[in-house]
Length: 360
Image (tube, rainbow, N blue to C red; front, side, top):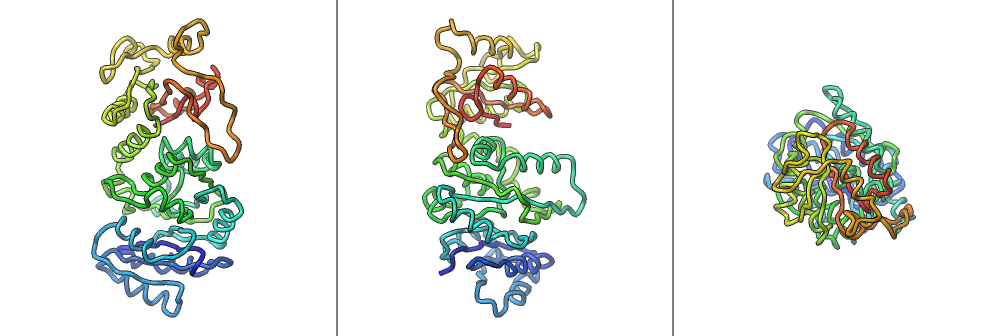
């Protein structure tokens, strides 16, 4: 039985799958198998796979109808036997040493349940400004604590770069199809159960960005479905805690609507726009930021908006623990505004992941 099982779903990738497979074949220093599941390709993908891995008994090919990515991943998991599960996409490349580095990292750090790597992005059309911002954001989220907080904004873990423990995967329920991103759903279930996730900052994966990529074309990966997935898991993570939403603009209202649909109690919205302050959003009051900050730090006030004491900063392998009482969810879409608000909240002694969470 191999130590690592690489899961490689593929559909209509005749022009890229050979190089993807070769990049896995060239991995050294780790005992692995690779389960390729063809999801009903109608081009020459199957023959390319067969030709590329012929004679290499580390690879097996499974064929299914055009059932979709999640069924393909589930079939790959069911057919595999490794202690660790890793991912590879059919239009990308794993760089030399990737899988050995990840498996060694998990083996040396048994408290971790998942490890990812940095990425090198290869774009067919040139990287947009948005893609460059996203890459910088990915590079900022590497430690377990950073990843735990960043997950409530978006996924800081590029799916095809990950290797994770089969035990953790089974414990949280594995891949499932809920109409939103299957990887983000899995990471958030891990987050809710306190699984430690880390990223090797070094780019060990060449990620190909192109207009036809599934994450750009399928409704499953739409902005709205990311939001619904995030709100669903955040509601369960918060339990009975109520929230203040910082941002009464478009992002805040969108997120507020999703939270209310999940049964979250919203105390109100916080904003700096005088046109919004004094009004309502989603039926809740909109209060001024300065007023709210003053109330949150007033020692004479009964029932402060936040309980801000009793937690020390988390160690590198310890996740932040939510404080009791209401928590602030920062939901703003303006470039740079999130960091400004984070600075204001830290300035009055509040801690990210404990007293507030950026969610947009």
